[in-house]
Amino acid sequence: MKYNYHVPVSTYTRSSQYTPTYHSPTYYTASHYSPTTPLYTPAYASATKYSAAPHYAPTQYASTYRPASTYVPSSSKGSRYSAPRRAGAPPPRKSPAPVAPVAPATRTVHFPNDIVFQDIVRRGDLEQIGRFMRARKVRVDTLFHSGMAALHEAVLTGNLEVVKLLVKYGADVHQRDEDGWTPLHMACSDGYPEIARYLLSIGASTEAENESGEKPAGLIDPDCKELVKLFEAGCV
Image 1: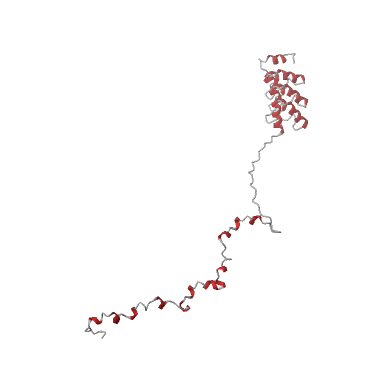
Image 2: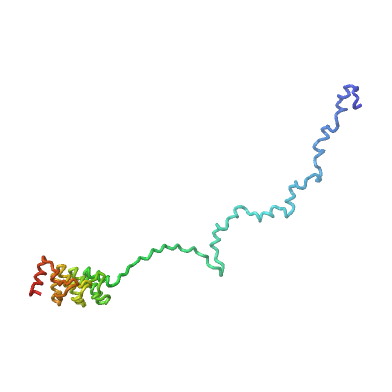
């Protein structure tokens, strides 16, 4: 009768006959599939699974993962460098103090004593001349690089006091320079009548000739009347 198309239509419209039982609302009710036994309860979904076993308890990881506030870098702790040093441990190394740049040494020039003495004579420093002579730092008859001795230098400066002091310390009034000039030659040539008079008074020779064959009187300037009179006949 299931495929009989001659069955009156009314036979197919009866709800009680063709209504499938598996479409019945009562068949799919929630109580039919509701898990009533622990058999359908997933073990991994149980909320008490990790709280019942001691090794899964949350307290197992509490000691390992410290709160964020405990992760303070050790380098920033004040007690890291303030702790007392271990006995026998070497002292901590200190940074070397900055070394100040060393200024280059001042270069000093030391001149020979004869050059220094020549400068002193030219300046007419009587005190320094006396110190040099008493300390015997230089010989009074030493010829300087200029080719003259100390007495020649003193005559050329026109300082009669220096001439007298050098003579006092043993300067030779007859000493010649590299050109054969005596101190009297220089006094007459440069126009120092007072020095010439003093040299003549202590025995300077008027007949001494230099390498050019000139005598002191031959070097006198005619305009220097005082020297001319000094060397006139009978005046020397």
